[in-house]
Length: 287
Ligand SMILES: NC(=O)c1ccc[n+]([C@@H]2O[C@H](COP(=O)([O-])OP(=O)(O)OC[C@H]3O[C@@H](n4cnc5c(N)ncnc54)[C@H](OP(=O)(O)O)[C@@H]3O)[C@@H](O)[C@H]2O)c1
Image 1 (cartoon, protein in one colour):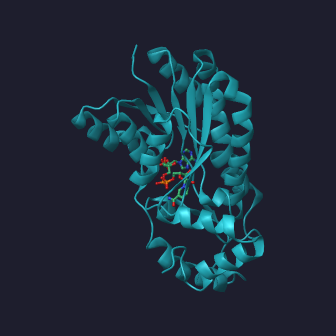
Image 2 (cartoon, rainbow, N blue to C red; image 1 turned 120 degrees about the horizontal axis):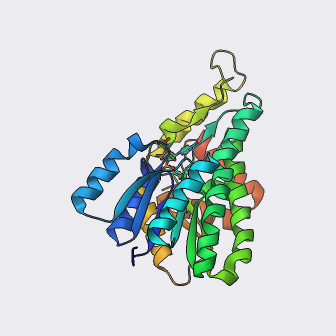
């Protein structure tokens, strides 16, 4: 059994999950870097072994009840404690609402919302009994603002995560369990490549094709200001090391700008600012 703090990170095959697992292990957390497909864990395991840091890879498919149960039982058996859970696994879903199917939208919620619920439910009994623990939910600036056109379901799933987190905090505070929201801005990961597009979308005859093309052109200055996923990992490390963390933290260069705008502007002004960011190619960070 380990004396070190035990951390679990979902979706560690790349991006924010990979960097968070590495940074937590680098800082002494006995870290379980989990992936749904263990073949994608080879790189992180190899680097961790070379660095001799306390990182283990384990298969955990957040979509699957029995996989989550089995992984958490193994971790508890090995350590008798869980100090940190980072609910990171997630993806984007792109498309007009008209062209998205209900199944595609349900799948989006299954991963971005219900998987967080499933993993969180699985660690609560251990954290409650030990009287401590931190659960970190990776939301997005898009969990506060419907910032990206043609991303209705992604935004809805992250807004749901924010409400879920705020309410659950009240439920678990008396057991010493902290639940925190991280709201990254544009982060340079495989997120964009992994975005799923509405199966019904066809550039040749979609009534939305022209607007979507304009939006993609407008994304260039936004992507140019993306931040490294290590910046998000650093915010998470600071949070789990804090004795009295806040409810939510922004992460990445543009996140702070966007959230500040949200607090300063009216709903209508914010909508206008967002449209200019995409369709007039002004980006989120303006000179
Ligand atoms: N990148 C950004 O700009 C940005 C901004 C705000 C918030 N976020 C949030 O940050 C989190 C991590 O994203 P990232 O940027 O690091 O993207 P990424 O590089 O695409 O990594 C996503 C991770 O989630 C896992 N995952 C995706 N869909 C899954 C599913 N259905 N079941 C199980 N695992 C799944 C992936 O596993 P596989 O390799 O097996 O697919 C991968 O490990 C997400 O929740 C995302 O919404 C990202």
